[in-house]
Length: 145
Image 1: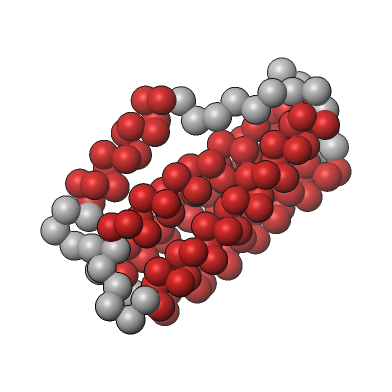
Image 2: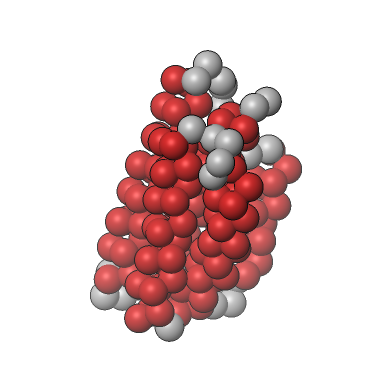
């Protein structure tokens, strides 16, 4: 797999994890006012948009997208259920999402440094967009703590 496919597939998998996680959390969170669920819906749309764009870039370059493995999906699903077993509040879920977004930020910065000079400009720009999206999410989630 070449650098373009590697980077685009990283973006694809990262955004897929975001889509899966947010979909699961929307059904779990106990949000009386609905403000947090509304935020999660917008957050989900952001991940979906990036996910779609990553798939398009992969296909444009002649590659098939490689999604998250079955074991990783199951592990994440179970971890979310365990972590929300006793606390389904927006504050607790916001903390979980901040941790996830911070991991995404670290991975994005590492991948940008690794691929910025070898991958196509549009793929690097999508990675930068994902980085900015994750950074913005951390800032927005702070109000729910």
